[in-house]
Image (cartoon, rainbow, N blue to C red):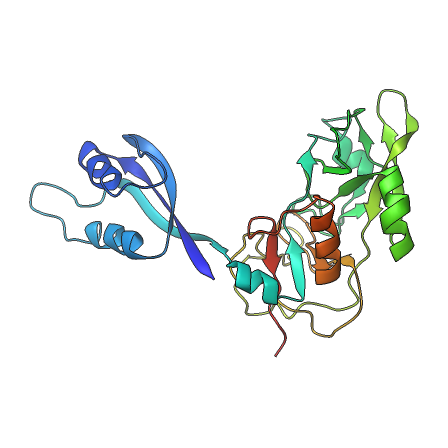
Length: 276
């Protein structure tokens, strides 16, 4: 597992000259600018440079300098050894559900509208009519926690595995789509062993005091408290914004990869920590 850090500041010319001499992936410009860096020699060099004491006439650190732990990535070996994965992304995004300004209130109920606690879908998604690309069988909308499939792919491949679907409405017509379904993702049968993990770092909501967890990828995803059989499920726990994380089995992961719905890499999958 490799850690990645985010640097940000109002960089001066001398800061820019130093940083760009390190041949980073991004050219740093004067003024406000941020960049991501992997832990290692370059990260250590940057930290050492900006940790020097100020001189009598100049400050070492520029204004608003910050370095924060941003995310992690995993090797192919670490991905291959996992039994389950958090699904971070799949398919092309087709933008917002409809009506764009009020779809949340028409599609969901919330126990708390401040933090989206208790988010529950109460109506079909309404979307614009889409044009399928050649070979495309799925897509997401702005919120990647809801996945949509071509109806014939769902019926041929997913339905025989016991997975259910929801209807989708084409917004302008108000008619149920003939070729799109939303995959119904069941709630997991077990809670996560998430307390005191890297994801357990969010403060409770000011209004309802409900606790949610970090949406950042900060470590291996926490394991379930108990084993159970599934292809795909969503967590009982809520993450920032009322989101529930999607977990898939290795078998289902391989199916998605084989059908070119998913790429087997660390940016689309987070391996779940093996239960000891």
